[in-house]
Length: 505
Length: 119
Image 1 (tube, chains in turn cyan, purple):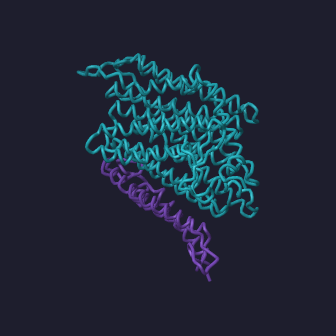
Image 2: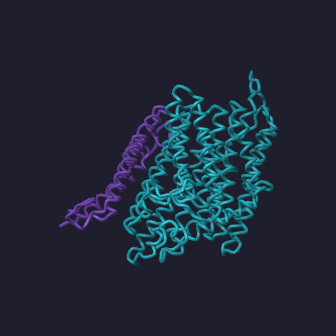
Image 3: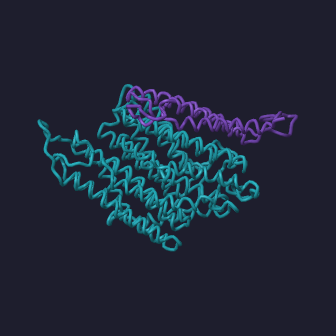
């Protein structure tokens, strides 16, 4: 194994080392912990980008952990899809870290930086692993870290939402284990590639069991992705979490979407015999309802952070409409929109925080208040983020939605998809326009004896960078979509993946 | 004579039923108990996924050729550790939530006047 192949494990090893290190040094020197956190994120980004470039040659690289051969040991799989997700996760982590450090919300609790590193450990592991039980373990790692991050800063509202979030996810994890147990008892393996091979050979007697297992597994991923009817936990949780944390959580729903893209074609794909594409009839209507409910939530939200949370739900729905086509071109379009919607969701959470910090007692409620500091600048940022989130030109959301609509045009249900995507865009535009005009165009009286709060301008940085990245994404739409489509073809071509992972048989 | 499979399956079924019922209750203590029962059932289920066999060597022995499947045992060990940690976290979290909001309702209603309160 040459040194280049060792990069594959770097996204898991780096945060695993950084987290305890930051925990140890932060007791005495806070800045040292922050430095470790930043260094680790930068290292992860470097590793992820180099993996992204390496994966562009189309070969699937595997890393056998501990040198155990593929079906017996745990294998990490680096292909285009995994490297896209790794780059996205480390970019988003850097933005969240920057915002938390600049606004000093990382000091609200004791362990922000170690928890962030553990969260990244879980995320990166989930993106890399090729073993289904290992996926469960990394899901647990990222969930346990997310419980801590979600409660960061504490307060009754967070604790209340936190209890619900934890309970929902524990039930989800238990269902994941049931699905795993069923699949293991049917196929006798946990390696995703080998499971895909063995699923085809399952006899007619056990088909119903296999269908239950597949649908349970998909339900768990749908819970993580917050697809209707499993979306109710998300808005309450994200709206009360610390904004930097909520921005990082924008990728948590995408973990669910990623797992669906990874697992369904490989295990329940064309080669699965009688159980081929078991979940597909359910996902499409659920995705459409998710998009409608999400953007309706944007329309009726009373606070900016709540609006951002609903925008995350709605964009996941739009994303899943494309994924539920289960063709290489629809998934390719979905991957572009996935990157965009993660950044857009994060930008909205950052701006909600920026607004709340400037309006003091008014917070981020969508109500007219006194003229706040830097209002024009904040309003401009909000406008850009809203344009990105609903998908108006010129930002990348427009290109993403256009790609999705173009890719589903050959499907039988294209009219439904177009209707939902265009309709939800309209609802979203009205919702954001209402919020923006109330917040930035109407002046309320200044409360007695209160001077307008002056805030330093640097807390706009994370939001501005997120918007700049979205602009870059629309400028570089050509190469990015080409990469996304290549990634989708690679995922859909599961026999080739199986050959690489299990070796030539 | 009751078979081993029936015994284990019915035990899992009863645990799941109780677990789901308690998890759907309105107060945190019952929810915690429900989650514990439910994850206990899941661990049993996972353990049984390697087939229920009696009197076989678990890992390796010179004299035998038939083995019990060792993998579910490893899986269930992982699951038990995670569950244990999660239970501890939930207990602390619900306790903090109760102390901060003064209510042990899952939806945090301070009045606590829910219909299921009488239970």
